[in-house]
Figure 1 (cartoon, rainbow, N blue to C red):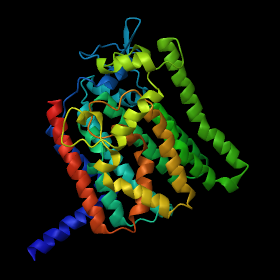
Figure 2 (cartoon, rainbow, N blue to C red):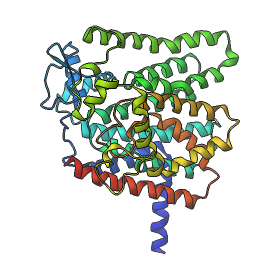
Figure 3 (cartoon, rainbow, N blue to C red):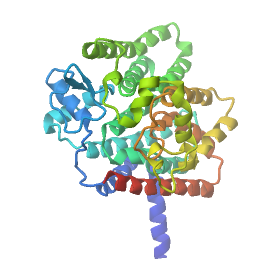
Figure 4 (cartoon, helix red, strand yellow):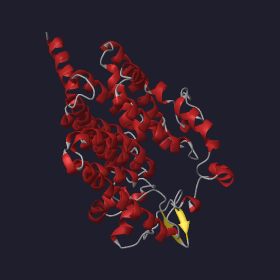
Length: 412
């Protein structure tokens, strides 16, 4: 009797993950406890560069006022250090740095940020079900939220701080909120908010502009009959993208005398990349085979010198195979194809980029298109056996927990 009650209690807790608040609290607890295994929970990593940029902004300058002890991957130009990453995370961090200084914990902040991502995903799953975009019950939503939280590369990015991981977690948050705004909001306000969020995502990681293809399509389709008012809506939706894009070009021009120079030309890259960069630059078809292999085929177990180069998206997280089921089953649904196009468009610059997301576990760059990928996956799981789905989730979580333990050892 007692065993049955305990089982029912834990089943209830698990299924409660479809609730956004519970999903946030679960992720916060899990991520915080796991982060402790890597060291003090409120520690600051030596690459918490967005803290330094936020400090610079607070003092009215674009180059770093305070120089971190570790300067790898910073851009050095005319005797000043800059970040080549777009600045939106630093803008958000400004009030925190104003209160706590540059020693504000990037590890703890990433834990909070990642927990918010899990809650946003739970909210998004509810929204797509209400809008009849996908038919997926609460039980399956809970399972996919659990899978995302602990069975994807998101769990690695959530736990270790670092400028690269912070940028990707912010990008996921902005895109998730943009998808949610497109579905839930109405009228001119939906266009403005969605445009603002997509622009914020692009000012976090530029290619996330392509992940905004589906929200743009959905807003147009939802309001198509409201012409000619729709034309005003489009202008309002594009305005934040255009304005923030122009500000970003000006930001680059002030720093490097060119609106299209991010600072990659001047960044202090690891020596392992230097020869390729001199031959091929930062983006080139030369990198495509290597990136494709490490993101989709390479299996990182048993651990070896190649493990930190990445890992197969589908072998490490086999639940994502259901995305193909969704594409086949719902091939007449235009949303399926727009989610697919969003993934493919976002993937192009990722696959052409120098480096695979070096010193990582798992295909971390794929997080940039995980929102539409999860929606495709959700469209394919509803008809499947719960037992099979649970087994695939367990395999995903186990592999990432082992990867996390390996990464902790590597970090130490």
